[in-house]
Image: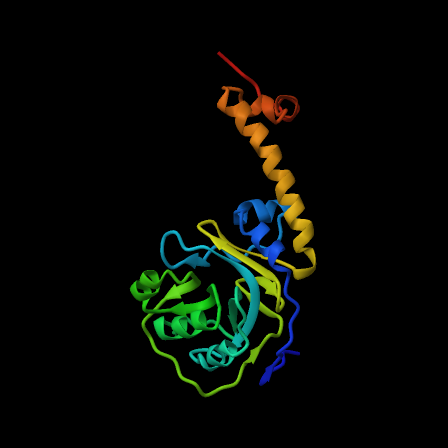
Length: 227
């Protein structure tokens, strides 16, 4: 059962070195290296070109059209955190704008991921405050109904626990469980090294058919070449 009206003030975060290491990889690489899991739904997009974020999650459960808990969450922020907000029901209201971004940044946050709407897009871009959201909408919100802070939340079909590492870039948003961060960093390094070798072969003119050993499988599947 979902807890409402609670704020957990102590969460486990990955160490800074692990966060910095993983920040060097894209969401596609992380997703693949982690076993093709962890991605949020494709509608979660950066609100401006070039937006990118990486940091441990301070999670928020919102009520539809109510941004009260985002203000509550600001008190729990530490340097490098990403606020990750889900909602008890679908809502595209503008939960977040430049004033909350100013508050979050002053508290050390490096971005927001929200399965809802945001507004003041031009101001957020001018501030270079990265936001990944489900919608852009000017409609305002109220502050009347309690949600919670730092409980597990489901955001765009991805389960996020407080302290999980969240990475967002032009390809989407991926969630790395806090207890898997070190493992995923090593898997990303290995994948990048492997891809560098493949890239060099492709750049030299070799075909993916040969680099990836596809020909035998294609023949077995029944592919035929005809003149």
